[in-house]
Length: 137
Image (cartoon, rainbow, N blue to C red; front, top):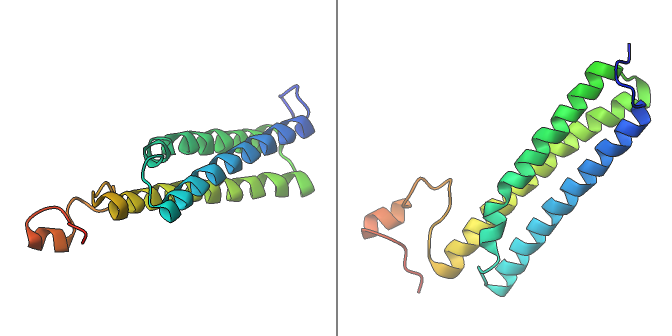
């Protein structure tokens, strides 16, 4: 039984609009890091790294909306496939955001010889053997 007064079609439209907004955000982040790599400029990358939580928050919001729609409307056929597709695309877009952050951290490392990579656990094995930070020649 549908306890939500809004029709499912309206909810699906809102859901896909959220997904498109998230796709645009992920695309802009990826464009920024790739442009920074090509230009060897780390200036705009702090914003990409700091903004990772925006994409994470959108993923949680979209997932919650999908699960609410599944629970309240019990969709079938095309509507069910749409919601399942949104869930899958949503996870992929969140991963694109994570990869943009990873690339941004790597570009900072290449351009500034400064390791801000969250996945590095500190100094690399080469840096530890040298006794400190990396020096690019």
